[in-house]
Length: 227
Image (cartoon, rainbow, N blue to C red; front, side, top):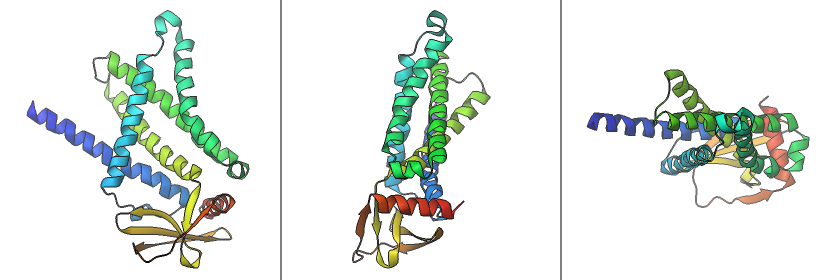
């Protein structure tokens, strides 16, 4: 019994670490800096716990309120799932600036739609898991559910970077893209040519906040530089 509890705890910790890495990989993939610079600390892990709990609680709440397929029919059941996905993903769609939408509508829209599909699967899989006495019906469902959770975290990282409205610029037009522990990840993009480097945090460094159109143009520059 003790060994079983230890193994469950180990699986949860491993999953949280993996989710945290995948979430930050989504951010790094958006801007194009190498994933090797990602260094997880307690803050990133806690952030993943929040997202992990949010996804599970959201899916579980919809599952408990879902329609009975035999009573209400297949279409009504999945209408509930789709409605849930639209509500969750709408913040990413409406949070994207018009300028970014105009210059990358297909990419932005495809990631949002993909997130909706992943959430529908997670809701359905969570329902099956609960109906089956807190167990998966087979290994295939377990593997697909784990992959769906990881996909949800990757997409969350990518989409969170996409709707970020503020960046900070340092000396020499370098832009702060992320921070891991005591490391800063910087990026510079000029005429769709990007470069990246890592420095230690410096209390004396001067940062200038940039927002609005300037942020959108930088994002587009980084995205086009890595295509």
